[in-house]
Image 1 (cartoon, rainbow, N blue to C red):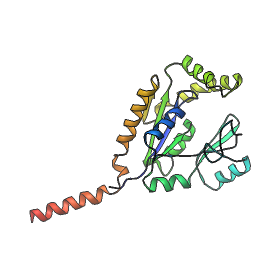
Image 2 (cartoon, rainbow, N blue to C red):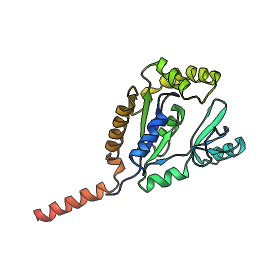
Image 3 (cartoon, rainbow, N blue to C red):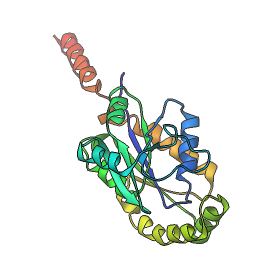
Image 4 (cartoon, rainbow, N blue to C red):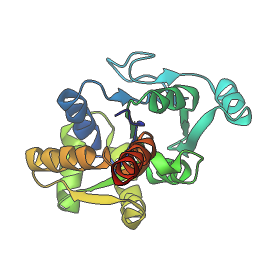
Length: 213
């Protein structure tokens, strides 16, 4: 039977592993669609417009928000980030799951949107604060000042863990990936994701009535 797509929201403090888990989840199932966010920040080395982000200026971003074309948006570290609505609606209506690698603010906005019945939200916790700091330093993307700011923000992000459907502690990447795949597989079978179920049940009832006549 046909099914509706899921809006799979993955959130965590920076360095806890959500981007790596997102990549692995897409390798597990290449049919998964990644929601490419729009942002006003400058591209990092090796990032490409339209693949990693849609890089736009403040004026264009604000217009998308005012026109109601953003499913969610937030202001983080001096830049705007947001998820365009149209490609997400098209994907889930065609039975394709969409992954969001966003913070708790964006997750909350999506959970409160008209698409909330299709949302699967997962929060990823680090095993320790020290490990979180080590991962941020090891990836070599940010200055010491930015890392310090991310660490300061991490507790605020972690404090919203209880607003998610599932919470995973990423102390073993392979095991966390397996748990994530299990969650997605089960949630795809959620009753609200199977629009043809009602028709099938009515058909069964009709068959039963015919046999009982």
